[in-house]
Image 1 (spheres, helix red, strand yellow):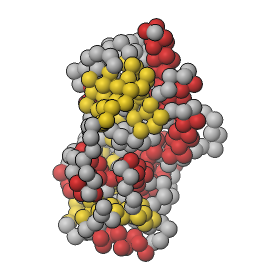
Image 2: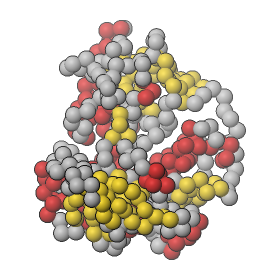
Image 3: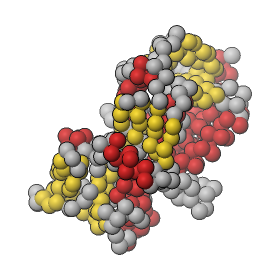
Image 4: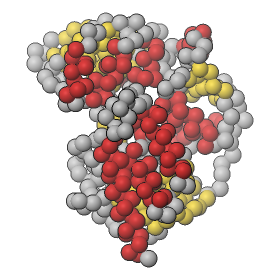
Length: 400
């Protein structure tokens, strides 16, 4: 098996995600922490041809890239061959209840279901712990008066689910068959069957859609301030978005960067009032209202070198002089797997029976951000996870 090296840092959810995938394959790896040994930062930048994001992953002589690149190899069926792992045989396991997703909704559903003796199994999805793993500080989850790091909150939820003997499988489901019971879900060649299914697959961050955004992704453009803000210390950066996530990213970066431009296409934020007050009052944050990203500027050697923005009212453009851009413009529900199978609205959010978590197929339930286009909070996701577990428990009892 080829030697695997991961350059990483603390409080990097994508580093955790990459390591989880390798651990699930029983692949040993060497982890080099660039925050513990700053000299390794320069080594990483040189080996990764200037990519300013962690993790950076090397398999033998091959530079894989970041976490998304590693998962792309997995989805394309190329990772095992690169690692030197022989293709496995198809396996099959049955559970009374399977929960797809491991955010606040999925873990809460597991806690309630496990305490009801349903012996649930969680299949975590590509982002173990969900969106909260990219959140630096959660101030509004009940029970934590001083706030709590998003990663730590999800780790505690996972520990609580494990305490009640929830089985947690790190993996990503790529095919489902809900036409008859037992329901069937596949992770590659591995088949899982269940009597009841809870969908808690959450949502995925959106991107602007510019070619230059893709070109300079991880070379100045990032979707995670806690992961990559380290590379822009004492430099001017920009954040685009108007929700809680965008303002939280801006506040985090303001603590380590020279200046933060907060770019929003409207004339008012949709973030919570408390978050707005903190961002507006911060001396290092300059808010650009009615403004959109027009182009990410750069070159092959340096990566991103500047950012051009445009005022939506006047059409006037300007260059900000920033070296980094952090994207925080919302999310898309992870429901592609269920297109044509489960009821969903025009935006792709699952549509449950009003007042419940029940879907249009008996025995299938939904909770969390995958079905909530309105509130999208950790505490509401947890609440609907509780609902889904209770609904599943009652439904299974009726069948028996």
